[in-house]
Image (cartoon, rainbow, N blue to C red; front, top):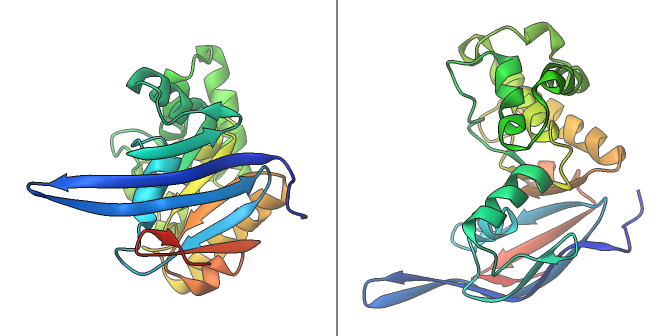
Length: 227
């Protein structure tokens, strides 16, 4: 798929500084980048390069100390917690290394959880969640608990949950980090297929093979875009 011309994500001179007592730690130092709608981008870099901080900012889990962040045409850097929470719920789908499934809930109920906060009418919940489970090939596990799933199945459930609100962008943080190679390849293939359907995916990883599935790679070093 060709790179989209319309930016979905724009960072201009984004800096993030964390106070550590009398010392300040600069995690990001003037990062500027654009990610187009429909792109599949991998973000890589050594430990301490700023990947996790950048992911938190892109996911509206944190705010920059300085600079601008535009998501889908809206300046989000200065929004309050209520507005950031609404953006996280309705525009961003998260996929984490450790799945973050709720153990007491069934797979179907886990996939439905974003709908609870998204203003979606309750009668629509099962149908939307079931469609997302079908998309990731997990319909047969809908009534199971997370403890009954394999690692690959748990990550598929997490991806289904990320899709259920039809977000503008999917942020995947080391999505194959807890999986064996074969299962990780399956998850990489699923992300590639989702991108082929027109979804915007931003992937943070140490895995060069996983990053190779993306259209391009943004490399960070010492809080700056290295390439």
